[in-house]
Length: 212
Image (cartoon, rainbow, N blue to C red; front, side, top):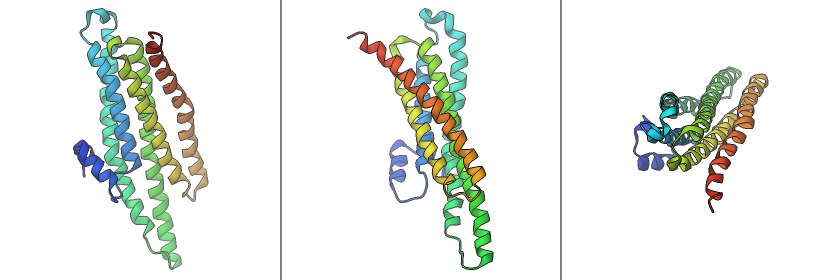
């Protein structure tokens, strides 16, 4: 199913159901796409404005990058579902005989690694989105600056949500070297970009506090 093609109401309904997908990873990708779209909107409102004539080329480049990230994050909703379904089946594989245990272990290892890679890609896309929000905050129209704050905090939430989908899968991996490699990637992105997102949000919010 193309979950990104569903209406908002349909997506929420299936997300709330007992269906295995979409889950946290797909929700994280969607929230990340929404966050990027908010920053992108600021770019759209800046294009063609005489007041921002000196940054028109920069804004055009930022919007192209934002368009790409939005599409990537929407595609990751489907990819997250595609990799989780085999893992759900793998948990149900028989494990009575040694042959069955070996087959299950191999399948689980493959599925768990695939289920780590998709949320890691969601995280990476969210990091790029946070970087773009910083530029939209610097160069975008002041009339929509609040949307940069809204967008970047959505991207931060998506980043954190996707990380949990990495950690829950690495916890079950038998290959602890690979598990820790994935954990290090996720933790490095969290350490840098949750802080950066908070800084951008605080800078945006301060513009309103100062006016009081």
